[in-house]
Length: 120
Image 1 (tube, rainbow, N blue to C red):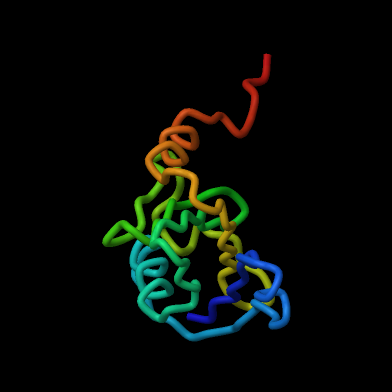
Image 2 (image 1 turned 60 degrees about the vertical axis):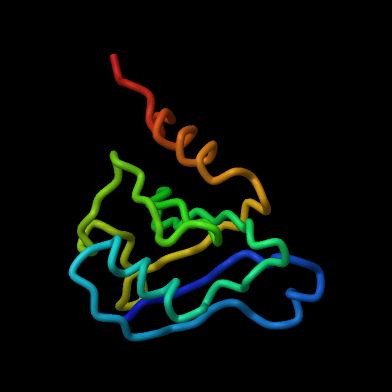
């Protein structure tokens, strides 16, 4: 499938290059898709080894941490690629850089966050 990738910059010098890429990745679900993006070294490695990222496709989908062996899905988010944001003929996936915030805290906050208020 066609995947439109983008990511935040990690430092001033990182702004020199654009971070948008279009790649082809076969994946049966969102977790595998994110794992394959991570395996491609699309995200830069940070000195100290403690970078935290949130994979977003319209809504936060997973937390990725340089110190973790793999991404962790946010449980209330869709796991199927068909449910991710589609644009320009592909799946849109952005990685938001959260510096060195502890990924466990980020995941816990996102698990508790309601993105839509209940209607009365």
